[in-house]
Length: 355
Image (tube, rainbow, N blue to C red; front, top):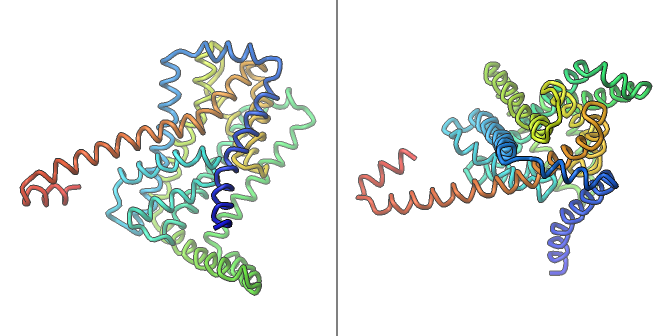
């Protein structure tokens, strides 16, 4: 009983502590410029706020479509609409867990839709790998696009950016090798076997070994369809486009002149480098890197204001939006179900089959 209470307390305390840490980091970064940042945030109009939330919604919609396309390799009848709902479900979980529970949320949702857990694990892993590939590609593109600006702003520290991109590339290559290359797969299984020799880790290691085996099968199955994989990568680019356009629309709404390509390139590098720093949900790393990269382009105060909006919208704004959408969908489906039950048996069966 005490162990269960301890686990519940840990589940609640962890996101609360991360939120407090995030607020403290923002307060520390803003410092004496808090009033100026507040004035810039108040300058945002309703049209800009709606645009920003549409960007957040677009991210979750495309993320759900990608999941649906991956699931269809195993479950041909899986609908795009169900995939879209999974995108909003993951969006609702992302904020409370600071991104740590996104994959688990997708697996749980797919299980509710009668997708086997093993395949759900494969879908989540492949989606994450594609996500990392696109982050790396956009970061390298951004580094090339903004190289003159970065060279002038950072000078001798510029090689560190290349190191960060190299580490991101190493993570991506490791994920792909784990998914596709038999020797890497065998090495991971051998390591898990060594861990399994210790009693308390045996069950965990065996379960992880089964998931790795299923992951490799799923990856090979998905990669056989080259056109679908190309479509998924294009959708990943569109998904990140929604996310990366948030700083641009924020700065435009505050009356700060900026360029779309430049802002998207900068936030791409911020995301890639923050993924290398081992902090939950990128706490502290995203805030510092965002301010550091955007200050030479737009100024310190606009950079901090855009950072506040970006962090809020990509976590808590998206969470609120996802919960509202899921609530509306739930009410509509419940209403539709009640209406179907009032129909004659033949009409009810026909409507149920259409659904």
